Image (cartoon, rainbow, N blue to C red):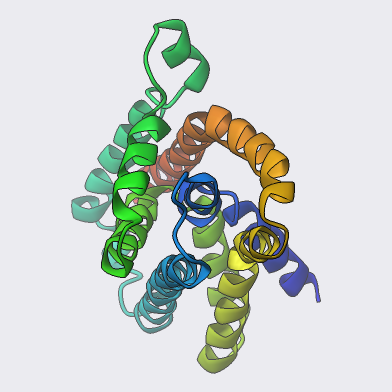
Length: 231
């Protein structure tokens, strides 16, 4: 039960990312918003992307943890890991919404908004947008990586872990699904709520990405330093 509650909590954090919530909100607020079925294609594509990445991660950890335990302690792997961790931490400082606005610069999410509005006219465009958003978030999906780590060390069978991972992805897509359903049923009555959600998430999206990258960088660098010192 503790594992399931932890996975639900992580999935709800993941559900607020650019790809899983901000982009769907933008689509729902677009002047010529796409039909619900197109938005469901987008959501299905990014959820499937997350799921496949997670399954791959589980299999890699499950099959390679023991086999590559010694190799993982080699300086040939630890030094690049340390460099990647430092690079992610350094890059994270560029994702600060407050500082960018103070310099008169647009948030990085502004470029994504333009891309979203340009991609909404076709199913293929939205599917490509979903894959692009998922790929962009690969290095900053800290909650998802934490969930994979929990599953990999839970001593569950690989089948059970994959089933729980599928449930994680469903929960992650839940808030966006709820908003799509609400927009379909209540139309303009739900628009003020969508605008408030958009304002809040867009205002803090850059900073949230920066924090995720910083945490990922610290974890990678700390692991590499520990391996180098202990070797």
